[in-house]
Length: 501
Image 1 (cartoon, rainbow, N blue to C red):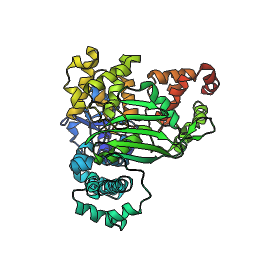
Image 2 (image 1 turned 90 degrees about the vertical axis):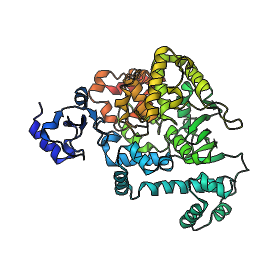
Image 3 (image 1 turned 30 degrees about the vertical axis):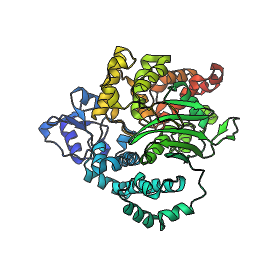
Image 4 (image 1 turned 45 degrees about the horizontal axis):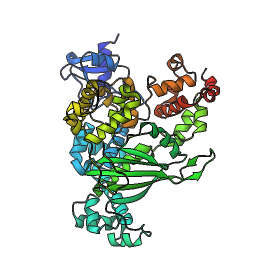
């Protein structure tokens, strides 16, 4: 039993060491918080205390958007200011400040513009406008050096409001004019069609591109994506228009007799609007998990006797992401009821409701439909069962209206997803891990994960003894290894499983 007076004193101190021991609920607002929440401490008569977040929710209270009490220890949301700053950087890289300004960024983070300014200056030393400016400068250099666009067009494509502002910023940053930057660049490739770009996306080694192709292969949606000659191609729905991308690794023989990336991924983009370049690059990096630190992950997982053989066999394995969190949520929703027919269902959905790509690009097909398109669609036109159609439209409506925010690092989406039809623990885990990029998600009811655990002879009792706790904070990467283990022949997995005991 919780002592009301002791809990109230602890909450009044806002000491973070009490976080997780109990939760403070406020009857006058209907919201519950962590003890360390910076919100004003309520009157004693309005305070209620609960041992768990779920108990507070069952009593009818909603989680505070400021302190995110519904997250768990070790998650991005629980980490506090640093994690919020990381989420802000993800959103800035996705062009939110350019499209919606600092107020739009603050609204998505659940803070006031002033709080966001203060938080980013404290954590990163720069405000949101300065970070957005750095992003525009990076975009500028890419467009100047890798395209033959007129310089005046580069200015607006890079996100500047005027050519004069563009010229002044380039000169202040590079001590050169835009023309001098272009003339001094390395010889460019032959002139391409308007909107076409060839880039190299850096990544940390070890990295096996073929591992991700193997993981992408079973779920390919015709008309949306394809794999041709070790190159992954897909359509992209971007803020200012449609696009398409082709991703491949420069091959060199590896010790495993397969092919290994040489520290960069070849990326060919075709965009309707070049303002979408940094957004497209950021989403491709999230898809392939290129910003991961494989050595940090392998150090933790390789020390576990159950996973050590898998890590040794495939060092640097990435946790596959997504270019569109909404698309990932639809896939997760339908996967549980569609089985082998998932690809066909999604192909029809994309062909009937997606936006067609212009001919002549790296891929002919359709972009995945936007939430608003599916929210207002006739249920009979979706090509789904009645229950599936209602669930997809409910999801799309929640995203379109802003009731559900699907952004990288937004782990609080789990509570909102749980309220929608069709989203059980396995589907929610897939959205958090694949769609939102949470590095620490593991749900043992997912069929692929369960198959891997069986092959390694790890039972539920082993997990309850805390085996998976040793995989924190990289359980999403442990999941990737378990999925591979589930595909191995029993004889190949059996010797490794003896370490589980």
